[in-house]
Image 1 (cartoon, rainbow, N blue to C red):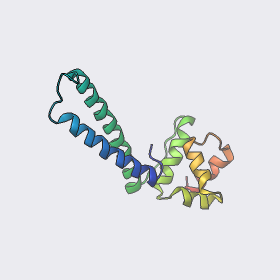
Image 2 (image 1 turned 120 degrees about the horizontal axis):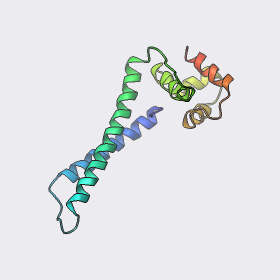
Image 3 (image 1 turned 135 degrees about the vertical axis):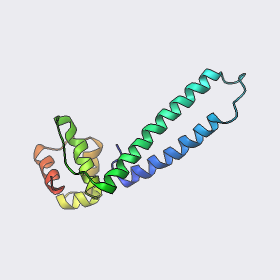
Image 4 (image 1 turned 60 degrees about the vertical axis):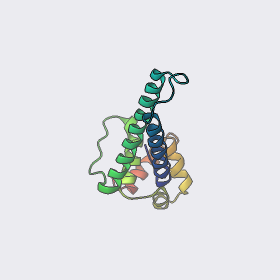
Length: 134
């Protein structure tokens, strides 16, 4: 899951590299003496799969930024960290802006999100939800 603009830029750059690699793999076939055709096919499938996954992450981030998240649906406690991250993105807040609302440093929000709120207390999680107006 892309959590911030920096990760978005990195993922976009990865997509471009994978597209280039796929074009090279799909271009004129390499000599079958150096690379077996089944290996080339496997490489192409792997790159296509990774490219699809990265594009999906970009699309999800774009969608959240564009339309926001109308409602939160949490059926399992394990979903709370992802919901909080999505809610922040949908609210159009950066990690720094959320940190300011909570009176903590931006690095703390980065840490929470990187570890999926593993070190956050229930009280802090509720504060984050309130700051996001949920």
